Image 1 (cartoon, rainbow, N blue to C red):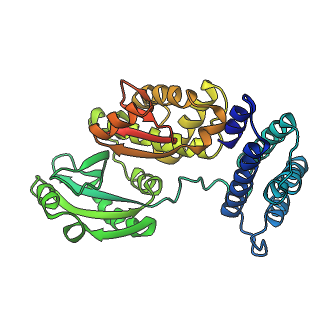
Image 2: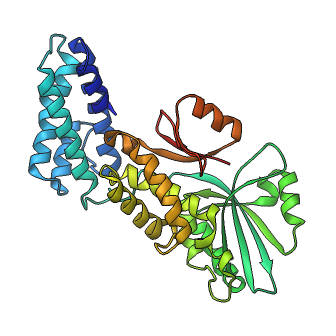
Length: 344
C-alpha cells in the first residue's frame, strides 16, 4: 500500500517529507511482518536481527541485502535525519525492490511463513447439529453470531454420518474452544434451533474457520447423499470456502499476478484448506467472481485483503456508496480499506 502511495506522491509536486513518511511506515510494517513469522529469541526487537534471521532461515542473499540497505540507508535516515532528501526515482526503485524481497519471503519455505495471516484468527461460530434418521446422516449448520433478532446467519452446511458424531464431539475441542449453546447462545435462537426435528445439540465454537471446516470435511458423508446436499454443490458453502481461500491466498502473497494465476492460487487454497474440491462447478462460478474482484485491485495492495465479513443489506449499501468495488451477482465487494465483504 505504501508503495502505491509513494507512486502517487511522485506523480505530483511534493516535499521530501511526504516520501520519508512512507519509508517510516514501510520499515515499521517490515519489522512487524518479520517478527510475526520468525521465531527469533535474541532479536531484541531490532530490525537488523530479524533480517539476519530471515537470511539464516533461507531468504536469498540479494533479498537480505536489499532489506539491510533499506533499513540502514533509508528507514533509519528517514526517522532520524531531518535533511534526508534522496532522489525520488531512487526511492521508488528501492521500495519496489523491498516489495520483491518480501514477496520472496512469502513464497519461500521458511518455517511458519505458511501459517497464513488469516489462519489462526479466532472467530465465534454457532454450530447446530440435527440427526436425519432416514438418511442416516447428521446435518451440521455453521452460523455467524447474531445477537439481535431470532435468526442466525448461516454460512456453511455439511452432512456427516450419524456414526461420526462421537468422533466430531472429541475433535472439536482439539481445534478450538467449545461452549454449550444452551448457555452461550441467545435463548430465542437456541429455542428455534431446538424445536426443529432431529435436533441433537448446539455449540458455540471459538476458533479458526479453516481448522473447523477441515475437521468436519473429514467426516462428510458423500455416499447415498442426494447430490444437492453435498457441500460442493451448495452455493452458500462454496461462497464461504472461496472467500476465506481468497483472503488466505492474498495475504500469503500469491495473488499479485494475472487473473489466471490469481484464480489458480485461490482455487488450490480452497481445495487444500477449505474443502472446496476443484471439480465443484459451483465453486468454479464463484471463483470467477472473486478473481475479477481481486484483479480490480492494484497488485501491491492485494496482500492487505482481510475478512471475509458478512454484513446486512444497509451496511452493504453504505459500503458501496463509500466506493467499494462489488460483484452485482454475488453481492460480494472489496472496500477501500481492503475488506472482503458479502451481503448476508
